[in-house]
Image (cartoon, rainbow, N blue to C red):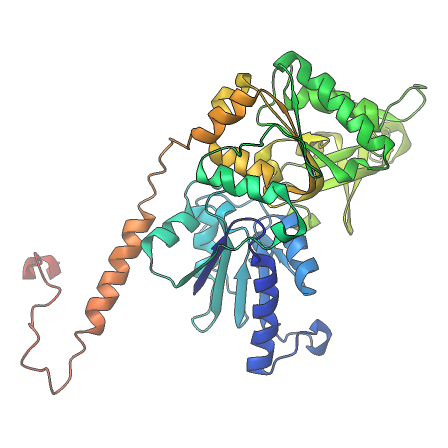
Length: 434
């Protein structure tokens, strides 16, 4: 096992591609999936916790990649009591965005691995921890049980990216001196909480007039409620990107949300059997009213990359608008333009790892708006919620036991040197009696 870690722009994706190509050369295996017959295992497995992260791996390597759930043959309905035996075939496994993997999923993955497989875990421990319990990547790094390579040189900055440098400054715990100064790839707009919606609307309208589409622009906010919350921003942005001015377009209401054809939507739950996963972003391509189909139910069809999924009304709770989404939901994805409002009313959610994760979602342009003091407060505030996982201490204990046992293999040379009661501390014969 190897852990590959590093911040944005340090070349993790390039290194993954290089490792895969080198593995092919060293072991004489083909990287063409069509070269393998049905039933033959493809030697290189690429996986990530979200569909979008898996897609990015596939695009960067030219090889098939999938979610961890799909790799394990899960249907998304498993719970913490699930103890099914699963098995994976392959010679090299690379898992990207490992910081997003919770303790339960990591356990399912590692249990399914054959003993001969080589494993590379890739991630950035300074991003948000997994939504589920645990902090697997951080615990593995701190336990020092696996060889670790940390990439530190920032290569993307050579292209003149001030976004990457700011991300590394945030990671170090401070805002750059030119934080509020506009540059070619970064802007800042001073505004109060009650002005956020109007400022975001103006920025988006300007970007739209320059030819950017809804799929190119992602607004990220940490909270759903309030005048600067995700719900309000989504309603406003829908009217910019996909209005129903004439009132003649098809529209289906679900609670206080109105869905229309061409709306940008976000999947909220894993549905591996439909090849769609939590965090996937798609577009509504058609809708039918109950009177128009044999099931007599309202139906929405969404296009997710190469997958088309239909939802009946009782399944609409799996969707939400995606013009604006939470930073947690955006983790594992990147967007050409990111607009990120931050104000003091977000206080409960303002933390360094959250701002760092949000900033690093941007590929080309980053537009920040809100209160400079709120940004500064968030950068200075670390995650004070301690996750008591015990994984680090247990990994260290297992490593110590393995190291001790490797020194105490009985041979004819050390026959008289090893204590015959080794490992029997505090154990008596009574413990073996019925």
